[in-house]
Image (cartoon, rainbow, N blue to C red; front, side, top):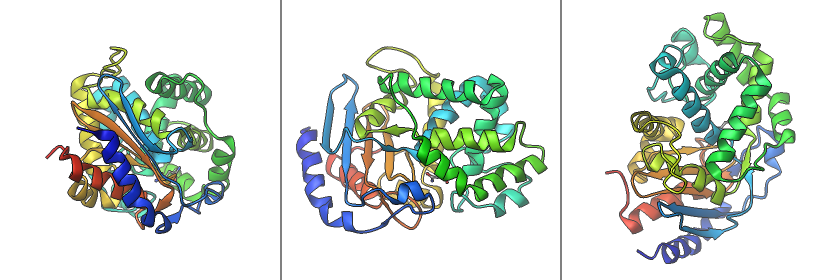
Length: 307
Ligand code: GLN
């Protein structure tokens, strides 16, 4: 299959869509990002890479980082982790508080904010220190992406904290139910820092390749997590990766994938490839408008999907 030609076709077709949607503005540092940008990369088992657009331009990966932290925590805690966070779609916006109250402080899944903050808390407990935790997360993402100098954007993290009342509330609410072990402010700051990691579509697609190959990076041969846990991570991405639009995403795209409010989406085609797409303007669910459409076009044109 001529993947380059398909990506170029998508690039052309997507242009009029770049004007639609809206860049995230509840994080002021992200509101400054220019709307009409697009990049898409696929990485195959043998390491071949196909890209269109600004595939080397780094953007804020935001909630896509929740896949990396879930992977680390699942590796450390196994099924114990599910005492603190579920694996059920929430049907609610990513930062919703209501469900958490009536479900006794146990977040529905690791990809809504409450779930991801609980996961970060579990990592801080394990590593006994917020800085060590961040270092472990950063080194994991560096290893996965093959870029040892990956970093996070302190300005974005600070901006998130300055407007972090809702996320702090989620953490405090969990603490009131006994589902939070460390200092709320420091732990939520660690969460904001990992959300502020900057990566390009080339780096992101490379970093997701292990999830397409049963937990093992097919290029380096390194196993990051077991195949059975990889299956779980992909299942949760399929059912919860796009919050209350996860059903729609599965319906139109048909791949396990995770979005972020920076406009990135990383997707997995088990046994075949990983895909990353970025376009900063979001739809009303907080998922990239053009990115979602581009993935839909990709699975339609290539016929690759898990269904
Ligand atoms: N850091 C963002 C937040 O906590 C992540 C949200 C997202 O990407 N959906 O609000």
